[in-house]
Image (cartoon, rainbow, N blue to C red):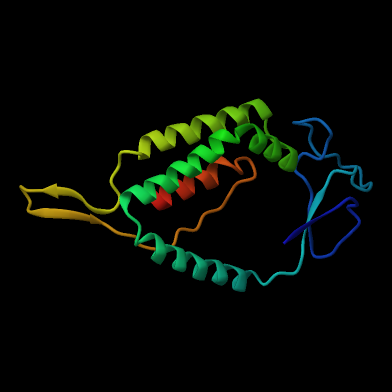
Length: 174
């Protein structure tokens, strides 16, 4: 859990100063030694990261078992919904990303949200990812798709919308 504070002299556990602490995009943090200028800082509250990760893994295993029962059409609908949600909310998500991280250009993030969500869906929509996905009669092989494990990923500050969207779409669709 993260909380915002306004004074860099507050030391709970770890203070992570915003990488662009200035008031304009692209302005680098000032090395003044004075209290932070009012922009939010992230302060990590006490959290047992090992238990947190183990809990997330257990939830992912439950979700994986559930998704393994879904048809191709149901998985396609989920993946399409993920992409469409990002596409339809591209402006609001871009604004949230720029406001929270103080990184990037709003217009560029809108374009990336719309472009990536649309392109990835169009790339994945006709790909089979359930049951028999390929037959090679010459080699007498049948390729069968099935879930293989938990996917963990890191979300970079510079790409807080598109990276998780892509990871989710690829993990579900394969």
